[in-house]
Length: 187
Image 1 (cartoon, rainbow, N blue to C red):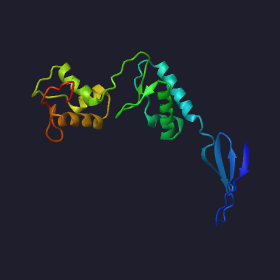
Image 2 (cartoon, rainbow, N blue to C red):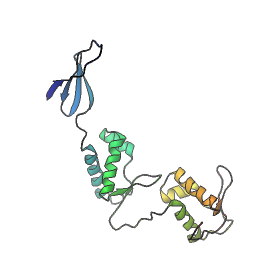
Image 3 (tube, one colour):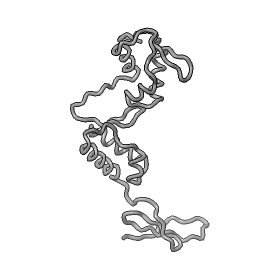
Image 4 (cartoon, rainbow, N blue to C red):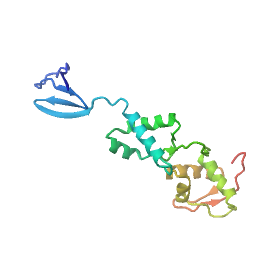
């Protein structure tokens, strides 16, 4: 293990310069006590995490979303930024893509994905499922489950449809009703 003394001066301090040992983990020795600081070389860690996730994706054909960022942070003892760099590497390789308001999605070869804005996809439900003017529309919870996105994302899409006059709703916890049938050109 390589050992050296740092050249940083401790202004006005009675502490001696710490000795830093380099190995798997960097340790700092100060006043005879050794303390673990951080990994010596985090370079490439995100690539290792990306590789682990790719193996998980190949091993599980039912996997539709990447693991939670918090789980990978805990399992690999890294920061959120390192995990997000791993996800970006997977995106560059065409293995995953971000989902606005949701978790990262696994991309499989030959898979068709509707990438239109959520408000357009929700508006299509009105016609496809035979909703009529005045009928109660699906709840935000139902839409969250169907599209696998967060509540704020669904709420923003529903608000857009209300502003366009397609849906109507009153107050928090409201039941939205179909106000008009959407047309394809403009809402």
